[in-house]
View (cartoon, rainbow, N blue to C red):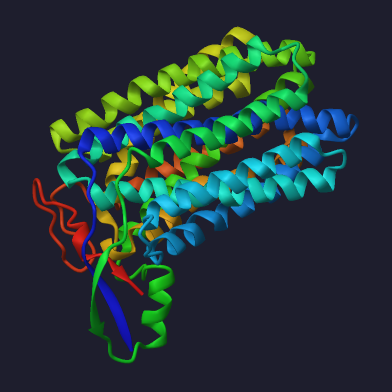
Length: 437
C-alpha cells in the first residue's frame, strides 16, 4: 500500500497569513453567528409563534449535529485535497459559497422542516471552511507564535459578532429577507478576498510504502488512540464541557422574550447591546491571554482562571433576572471565554497527535465546539421543564466546573506527552511532514 508524504508546500508570511485568516474567517463567522444568535430565533417565532421554544431547539440541534460532523469531515477532505488551487483554499471557497446559499434558503423558508434542512446544510459547509482556516495554523505557523496567532484569531469571532449585532440594531426596521441576504453576501465576499491573500497551492509529495495496517491502527487514523494520546482526548473533554456553559448564550434571545417578556424590537436591541459588550470583553482577553501564555510559557493557569470566571457569569444569569445584571454577566463570560479559546487553541496546536493529520485532528477538536450547540438546544426544554431558567443556567455552570477538572491532565508547555514526546521551547511545528493518505 502506498501513501504520500508532503515534502514542500507554499508558505505565507506571518502578517499576511494572520490578516488573511482573520478577514475571511471573520466574515464567514459573521454570516453564520448573526443568524444563530438572532435571526434564526425570530424566524422560528414568525413561523411557529406558539411552539418556538421547542422548534428552535429542534432546528438548532439538527444544525449543530451537521456542524459536528462538518469539522472532521471537512478537515479530512482538506488534508487529502492536492490541487494547484490549494488544499485549504479549495474548501475555504466551497464551504462558505454553499453555506451562504443555504442561508438564503432559510431566510425565504416558510415551514419548520425547510428551515431545518437549510440550517443543517449551512452548518455543514461553513464548518468545512472553518476546518480549512484553522488548519492553516499548524500548517504555517511556528509553535512559538501559535499562542499569539491563536489569540488574534480568537479576536475575530467577537469582532465579527459585534459588527453583526450593530448591523442588526441599525437595520431594526429592515425586512427579515434583506437581513438574510446581507449576511449571505458578507459570508461569500470575505472568504473570496482572503483567497487572494493566503498562499497555499499544490503540495509536492514523495511516495512511501506502508505495511499492512491492523484494524486498531486504522481506527486511530479516524480518532487518535486515547491510550496513546490521552492528552488529546482530555483537551476535547475540557473544551466540550466549557462550551456547554458558553452555549447558554444561544438561548439569550429566547430567554429575553420568554422570561423577561421583551418584544422583537426590544430583544434585538438588547441582544445586540449584550453581545457587543461580551464580544469586546472576549476580544481583550483573547489577545492578551494568548500573548501572556506565550510570554510566561504557561497555559493551564490561564485555562483554570478563565473557566472559573465563566462559571461566575453563568450563575449571575441563574439567580439575578435583571437586564443590567445580564449585561455584566455577559461581559464576565466574555472575559473568560476569550482567554480560554485563545490559549486552548494554542495548546491543541502543540499536542496534535500527528501533524500530518492536522486539519482532521483540528476538526475533531472543533467537534467540542459544535456538539454543545446541538446538545444544549436539545436538553433546554427538559431543563426548563424541570426547574425553569435558573435550573437551566445552574446545570450548564456545573458542566464548566467539571471542565475545569478535565484541564488537570493536560500537559504544560515543556512537559512530555503522548509517546514520551518532549516539546522544547521554540520547537517548530514542521508542517513539511504532512501525510496525505
